[in-house]
Amino acid sequence: MASPGPSTRRANLPAEPTQARRFGKARTAQSGALSEDYVELISDLLASGGEARPTDIARRLGVSHATAIKTIGRLKREGLTVAKPYRGVFLTEAGERLAERVRTRHRLVVDLLLAVGVPAEAAEQDAEGIEHHVSDASLAAFGRFLRRRA
Amino acid sequence: MASPGPSTRRANLPAEPTQARRFGKARTAQSGALSEDYVELISDLLASGGEARPTDIARRLGVSHATAIKTIGRLKREGLTVAKPYRGVFLTEAGERLAERVRTRHRLVVDLLLAVGVPAEAAEQDAEGIEHHVSDASLAAFGRFLRRRA
DNA sequence: ATGCGATTGTAGCCAAGGCTACATTCTGTG
DNA sequence: CACAGAATGTAGCCTTGGCTACAATCGCAT
Image (tube, rainbow over all chains, first blue to last red; front, side, top):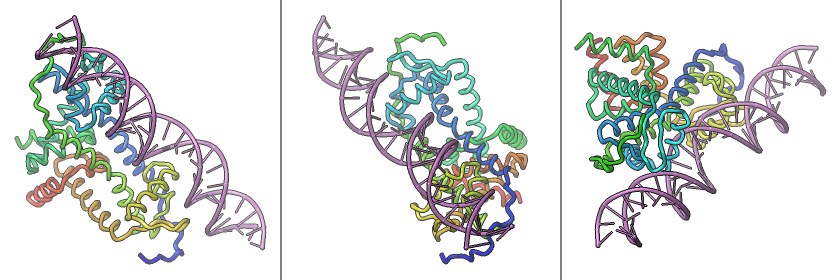
């Protein structure tokens, strides 16, 4: 590794708040990621099976049921879900709206990945992580790109 | 909202460990994200200014200097960086290699976003979050796509 | 050479998201 | 109807990544 000369203290770096904002944003966006995953999954379960139970949610997300229940509690505090004890989980208006947006975005991301040649398996997998970081601007661009080459 | 009938308990959901693995992976990948950001930034600072100091790092990442120092400590434990007190931060062999990989990936992601029509500003911003979730398979596909339409 | 301002480092706190272990409630079956 | 087993919920702990407040060091200018 060798120690570098301690001479050139203070380089030419002018604060650069732009990049900070960029990183900060990426980080913040990632915050809501968990809520989005839960809401999307709950919506799916309600649509397909008729019921969203903590155990199913936990299993699908690969976490313990305790973790799932705790998170569901947070979603409730955030006004995204409603849940009476031992009675399953449901979405509020806001939750439904979020779910719809998330679902749309997910599809768009997967479609884009497929369109640029990503294998189906990887596309699904990567989309799960990517989707939470795609801005509206990018989303719009994805839509245009897909329509253009449809 | 309205409570649904408690009749159809136990729908037709067959455990589905596949999705769990998908989510789990997305989540785990995101774990190393912070390390990647730091290493990439340190590499940039070293390359351009000659020195990577905690305060600069903190400012660029938009966190407090205390947070940056704490994280740098973790990177040290992980064998990615070397740092003697009050002497700036440097990368180990492993750190350099990681930085190079991350940089390449970042460029590829930005280029792909631009290629599908995402505005430059958004591309840079979104790439920051997206890059940590792009698998090798997708990365390879991005490369092919870009070369094909170059 | 000294001393002040900036940088660096430390301590202690918080919330989120994860876990295990234990307690409670529910539900289908005998 | 009772009860065993599954599902649900609670408690307590851990780690990560943030923060502020305070302490220690450094380095430049006088």
